[in-house]
Length: 76
Figure 1 (cartoon, helix red, strand yellow):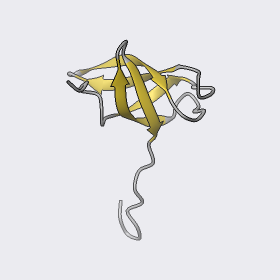
Figure 2 (cartoon, one colour):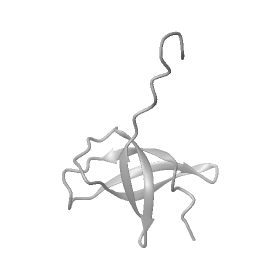
Figure 3 (tube, one colour):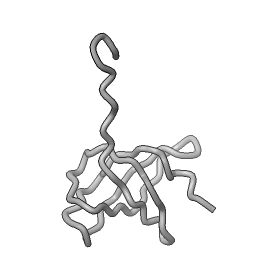
């Protein structure tokens, strides 16, 4: 069964300093917020908005940087 945070965005509260280093991500879920341990294939600064792509046992979330789509000219 997939964790309900997969596919959601969150904000890193502590940085991920490298591939084998862990940080923390705050995600909105079930009407509140929860902290997950975060890992990434690249270093990411605290405050970075990320997308949760997988959750492993122990509430370890694999994350990637979230880059919103550019709506183009005139879009908001």
